[in-house]
Length: 64
Image (cartoon, rainbow, N blue to C red; front, side, top):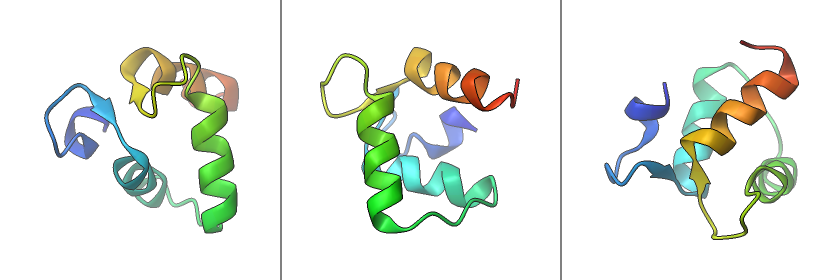
């Protein structure tokens, strides 16, 4: 899923790509909720979600 959502093929997700992942997972969060979770997941505060950060989200939610 991460690779498919990584439209820029730069091995990281921006907010729009992260939103696509959520939609694929069937999650319908508000824009504010999505932004909040994106910022919390962005552990190194670079404005992107790396694969490691993505994996941490999935593990925290019990999805892996």
